[in-house]
Length: 214
Image (cartoon, rainbow, N blue to C red; front, top):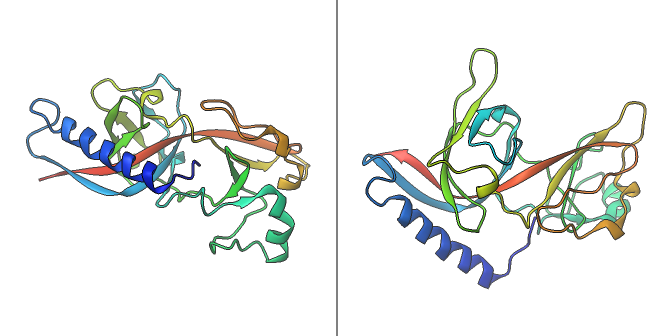
């Protein structure tokens, strides 16, 4: 995850407020919808970039704080192990299910599942949209949808890359086997493979607010 400086944080906050102001222009949302600004959060999403809606949101996660500054460099993995897997930011490393971000930082897992709700999301580019996450159906699946024809790509923060690594069948999957030379990952690019691991890339959406009924 991109670690932002104070100026970037203020720029994102100003941009988020402007985007939310545009969203509440007449005709863009229902009159009874209220948009509430929240501290920046991040969604880990799995869907086709061009999709505007779908199922599978039960496999999406949420970071309530930026995991990048709380991450551990690959070169410090041995120290992390020596500390019983407890990172300086007090999150616990899971050797059977671990995450990397675009600079090669081992980061904490997001919270699963993503709670149902209406999230104001952006990729910090041109598009801001309301993402609706529905409650689970009887089959355990959760539907999602973006308003106004926005696609998942439109609200993906391309500079934030993230992937989940789990052991491939019969193999050892460890950050020790990750190649530091593969980082940083270019914006929008795939995260690098790690020997012995299955990899799942997730798209990262920036959450700047919540939409609620007034």
